[in-house]
Length: 262
Image (cartoon, rainbow, N blue to C red; front, side, top):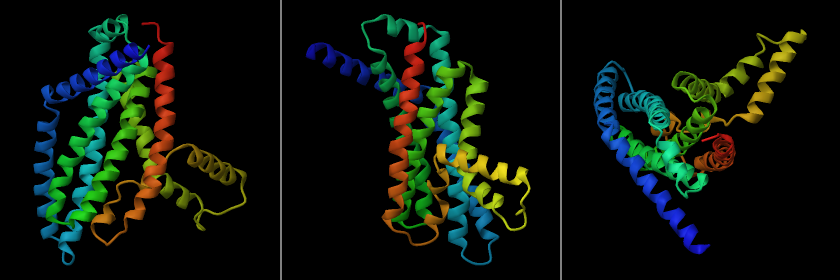
């Protein structure tokens, strides 16, 4: 039994390494580098239009754009690469070997996680021109946690939908809703909208129920961290939510993978 487990771990590491090589071969990091340079130049240009706090404005604008770009890029890469493996029967060939499905899943997850780590570091480098090193490090760490959740969600969406467009659309919808949920809650409780009508109460109840289920991504990778002095304690809710929702997403992804007839 220990030999079998050790062999499973070795194959899991091999799958992770091949996944990272696939990211390199698909020019993932070259595309990210080109986008980083373009967004950096755009932030410099916009910052010149600011009257005061030029560096803070540039940092916030660039960080917001880089965050959204990194999320969209890593999600698209995960979904398209997995769809290609399914279409090429690569998944069926691997699972036909004496390889546990959990080893395949965690191998892919580890490879994508390592790719997202490199991507997060790459998009964080230009922020060093506008913000302190400590603030950029906290922002980069939070982005890694956010991308890890997006990867697990992308794998779950693909195992459920098995097609690129529904899976990618579902991931983006989930992400945008989780990211803007706090603002939606504030709008639903606004005194301007306050009334005793049952549609208003029903809407508020539905939003409150959704808020209990979704992660509060509004606390992740906040651009204001780069403009004002912050404490490392801001990462505590980020870490806690990452651990909780990562366990949920991984469990759901493994369940979908095991129930597939491959």
